[in-house]
Image (cartoon, rainbow, N blue to C red):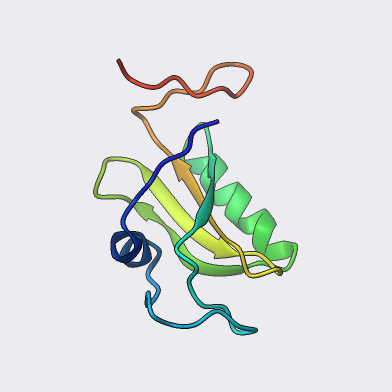
Length: 102
C-alpha cells in the first residue's frame, strides 16, 4: 500500500474535474482519489469496463499519461473517485505488492 500526496488543483486537473465544484448528489471533488495499479494497459481497461458495468461512471477514459504510464478514472456509486493505472516504474510483485524505485 502506498499513500501519495498531490496538490488539490493538480489532482483535479489530472482527473479532469473542476476543483471548486461542491460535493453533492451529482459528484464534486473532495480532493481525494483511491487508486488501483494494474499489471498492464489491458488490465486498466478491463477494470474500468468492469466498474462501469457495476454502476460506476467513467470520469476520464484511460489514456497514456504524461508521466509515462496509462490511467483513467471512475466515480463509484457512492461518489468516490478511483484512478485505475498502469505504472511501468512501479512493477507489481506476484502477490500484487508494489516495488518503489530506489
